[in-house]
Image (cartoon, rainbow, N blue to C red; front, side, top):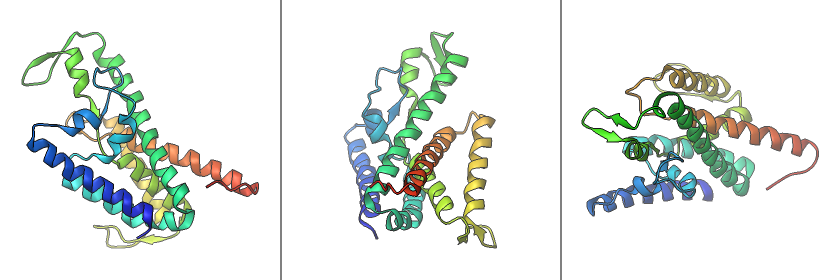
Length: 223
């Protein structure tokens, strides 16, 4: 396994098990390292980096790291470690920025007129509720990896469970993007998935790839 891909997986595993140990001492790592809404008291800029190494459970971690292993190692071998690492981190930060924008729109449209929020079990002040708006996970960076793979190897056939037939990478990625777009606008109140953060990772990934392709065509290779 290439070095950067391997280390990304190891770091995510360390954070996951470190979170379990911290929880046994009454410490919630996501409260410190998860990405909070920028208007919340608990927000700081470091969270734009740290949030992508935390996960909401083992299945969340497993599927993200499986995708990093499955597609990231191929991109790292194609691009080289420096470009791949930059792409992964930058797209993860970009996904976090998009999530902040989406949360701000939500706040302005539905929350700004209120001083408190009913969360079902209690009515809490708005400043406390804002601290509950936090995001964790590498999914934004992972979706950027999926996009990059689909653009680099568009006709590569993939066998994706539960589909009984192979699907080309470009259709697989386009399908995922459409599902995320639909899910984001569906606004299911029971859906705790940051769909627009996923799309944000893909958007930043697209911008980087188009920029690099233009520079590489002009004979200037970065990283």
